[in-house]
Length: 183
Image (cartoon, rainbow, N blue to C red; front, side, top):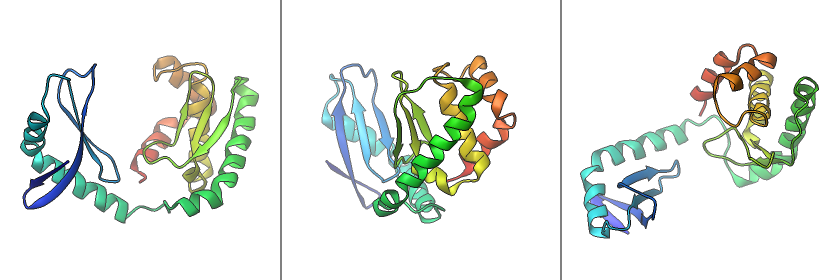
């Protein structure tokens, strides 16, 4: 669907979701906009909601463009394919080093080209890492791996989780801030 906001054509997806209770706008880093609505909301109402929030949307799109322009990481699929095995070796190396302490059992280790995360851990024990961690300092890469390993024991960010992380990465607070400021 398309709407005009301040003389700019804005393409978006209108999606009804059964469990949704209110209208919501999400904007991905690539500029894709989705309006999520409860079943009782019409597409016309969704469009009005989008127009009403037009200034905010244009500002977010501008921020995403600026951020992409000054990104310090390559983000091409080719770069991902070239560096995927290197990232997998790094992740496995860090897991082996840290798991001497933690002794957690995990399932698969996968490398992905993620836009908004450095890693994730599934309930099945699968560990996923962003291949771009090869461009980070050794300390930051180790923090990412420790963080995901600790999710094997604590699937939340509660006090016990951070105590586990601190056992191998005492300066995790500083590293966490550094990661948030990257890209």
